[in-house]
Image (cartoon, rainbow, N blue to C red):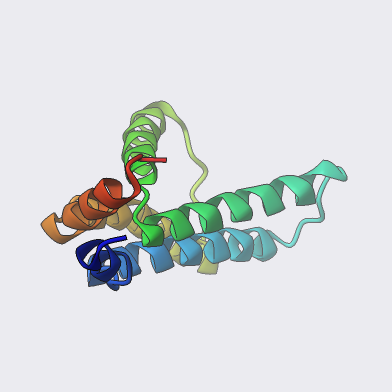
Length: 137
């Protein structure tokens, strides 16, 4: 590894990337909190497994964002657009009280993370990591 490659791989990610990664982790925590607010026990043994898989999904994506994996940036952008389209046609039940605050916080995070990934400093972070690793995976 050359000195230039070594300095880039050890560089800290820009603030936008750090925020995007931590917001993704926080989104997972809000997901669990929102489930706890409902106070309902799972209707089957598979529900907790599914909850755990969803949380792990957001943790893996947050870590991949922090590490500069270009594929995750595109995955988040595509799934955000698809989710916005789907939610336009969906009839969502909006919670009340504390659940409403959590609901709004999740939507704000849902929109902020892709915006952070499109900032010029973020694009440079993903581009420099792509060039060093040689692949986007």
